[in-house]
Length: 546
Image (cartoon, rainbow, N blue to C red; front, side, top):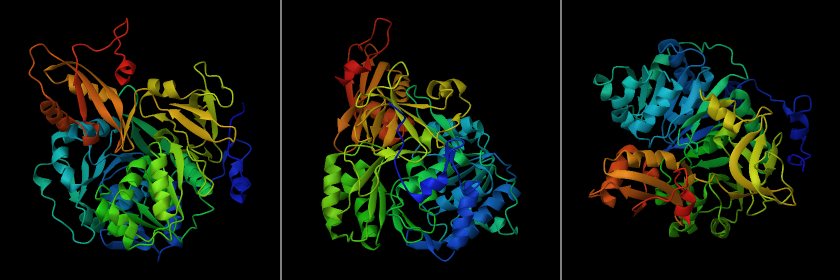
C-alpha cells in the first residue's frame, strides 16, 4: 500500500507543495514574521479577550515588542536561549509567547498545575535561563530555583494588565525578579527589538511530552515545523475559517501543543480569541459563551460532555458556530450526538502529537467520517506498519507512522530516545495502533499499551509507580488506566505493602498529591499480596487491566 496523503485540489495545495523536496513552500522565514505580519495587517482588530478586557493586535504588538526588548536588552538573553512560560489562559500568555519568538528565543511551555518536582525537571533539562510565571506559583519556584539555570523571573498576577499588582517574593528569590508590568515598562524605553536574524531551521520551541519510560522528554520543534503545521491546519479549515472574521473560544490550555498551534498560531491571523482561564468552571464558561457570538470551538471529549450536561447550555445562541474541532483524546458518539443536538454543529476529530507540531490528520468540517481521525493534512505521509516495519494491507491494524515537515527534529538532548522513534528516513513511530479504511480515512484502534489519557492529558505509569514506590511503606506498585465516563480514563494503582505496614487509601492519596499534578494521582487503589510478573520479573500490566 502506498503512503497516504490527503487528496485535494485547492489552490493553496498547488502553491504549497514543493515537488523538489516534498515539503511546503512557506510564505514566512519564521514564526516571528508570521506574527508581525498579522499584527501589522490587523492592527485595529480585536486579538485576545479575557477577564472582561479586549486587546487589539496593535496592543499585543506593542506589549510583546516591549517584553521581547526587555528579554534581550535588560535580561541579556541571547538567540537560542530557552525561556519557560508557566501561565494559564490569560492575555499575558500570548504576549509572552510572541515576545519570546520575536526575540529569537526558544519557548518552553510548562503546565501551571505542576508540582515543584515536575517543574524542576523541565527547567533543569531545558537549561532555561528565564521564566515568565504566574505569581501564585512563586512559592514552588523558591524551593527549586537553585537547581536550575534560571536567573530572570518575570511574574504576573492574572489582573496585572488591568491593575498592576505587587510581587511579594522578591526578598526570598536570589534570581532577578520583576513584575510583568515593570518588564513592559522597562522594555518600552528601547526603540525596537534588536534581535539576531531568525533562520527557518532554528529551534522555536521545546514542547515537553512523556514516554512509555515515564521520562519527560522535550520535542524539539523548529520554525519550519510549526510554520508548516500552521499552513497544513489552515488549509484543512479553509472552507470554514475566514481570516479576520472569526471569533474563536480558547478553553484548552495554551501550554498544550493542541491549543498552542490552533489558537496561538493559526487563529491569531486577524481573528479574535476568547481565552478561558478555567474551563472547569462550566457555568462561568457558559456565561462567556452567552455574551459572545463564537464561530469556532476547539475542545476535547470530556469538555463537550461537561458542557452538554449543564442545563444552562441550552440558553446559549450557537447560530454563529461554524465548526468544532476535537483532539487530545478519543471522541465518543455520545459527545458528538449531544453537541450536534445543542449547537447544530458537527465535530471534526483530528489526531496529532507534540512530536508532530501537532496535527497529522484532521476531518474537514462538514465532511467528517465519524469514528475516524480524518485524512492526513497536506504534505504529510501516513503509513501503517507491522512489527517488522513493513506496511500492512489496507484495513489491517498496525503502528501508525508519520513523515512530513511538521515532524520534530528529535528529543532535546536524548539521542537514544530519539533513535527509538525516528527512523533514518524521517518516519516517526507514534506507538499508536491504527488502520486505514477503504475510503482513505484513518482510525485509531488502540493507544500505546501503557499510556493513560485523563481528560486529554497523557499520564505515564512509570512516573506514578516511581512516586508510589518512594513511599516507605510501599514495596511494589503497578499503574494502569481504567475506563471512566467523566475523564475518559482514570489512574488505577495496584499496590503491594511492605510487611506489617499500616497503609490506607487516604495516606497514599495525601502522599501523591504532594508530588504529582492532581490528574496523575491514582483515583482507585487495589492492594495485592504480589504483582503478576513474567519469567524475567517484568510486571505484566496487561493482566492487571483484564
